[in-house]
Length: 190
Image (cartoon, rainbow, N blue to C red; front, side, top):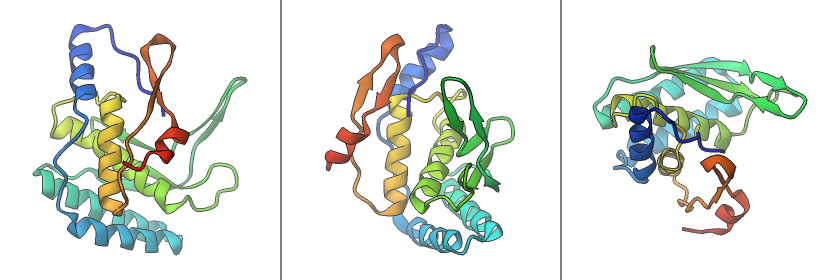
């Protein structure tokens, strides 16, 4: 995961920096989120798209209730979109549409079209829900991918899944972007 570049526009830059500085959030109650995540895992193991969508929307509703905002609507789709260029390969795991507050999640891998792992699906759902919360709860209308954004999304994921939070280890790239050093992050046990 790579952060967005710092925008040049003054208002966007201010939003980006506020988002980057917000590294933690008040987490919602563990229940019903943990129970709902188990139900989502079971739905994925059955490869039941309708049930996966139902459980994903239940998680969205629980987040919305906890943060006193309108729930994002979740649409679950089949195989991930896949794009290949001369220099890269790209798969879309999920997205959030600002205008409609709708999240799309893809439940199958792009190439062999097998069901995605539960961790990947839940992480993507939490990532997209974090975009929604950025917009409707935390006042970040552009919901940039900042280090703060990724850290908030990670907190939500580990909270819902009931796994230990790992401190993300960042590497600065040319142009002021950052990427997560996954090897170091995985060695870091909090």
